[in-house]
Length: 252
Image 1 (tube, rainbow, N blue to C red):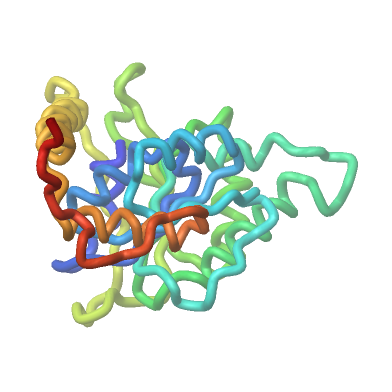
Image 2 (cartoon, rainbow, N blue to C red):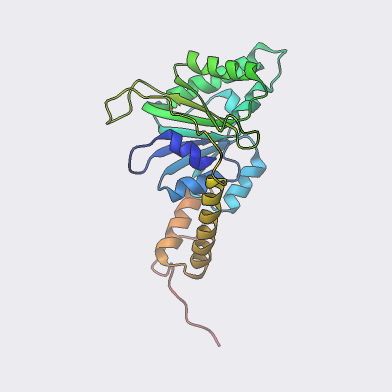
């Protein structure tokens, strides 16, 4: 589903700065890495972020309740994706005006719109409970300044049917000079879960890369990991020196 979300994001060639909303353990982030993008992940579950840290994902991670909105600088991101998350914003306390689904959705979409660059997109794969929930989510998003709409893949299939909310910031995409158009949903019969197949192939390739990485830890790789740990606030990271990454002689 992350592959399909990236396809709908319709990014221009080259690396992009992306926001992964509800990043969990960083599975979607691995695909973003493979595509050459830089990403920031947010999630409400500390345990999932701990797993992501243990897996040494490349993206920067934030513990964040997205229903409280974001605090990123305006125009920080070239796009945003989210897999199976935004429907949970509708499960909120309805007794308080500030914590109702409408209030949480409003804070979420308003601050997200501000953090995206002009001409960018945000793509959300989600599982709506009913049509009323779809209308609520779309209505709040449009009121926050987004344009776009709903893309439904395989609408006639019970198993393969997927909902994607595809939202636009501004009128035209950067460098393209034309109005953004809502993508078409996939139709017909699913071709043997093509995206799942690609995911499996990518996982196998990552496994080979990870195995190679564990066996070959050169100086550049070690410095990169140490810098990543420092940026995340990890303590007791050894200082860099001329001996960093140097192969030591065996001791008999």
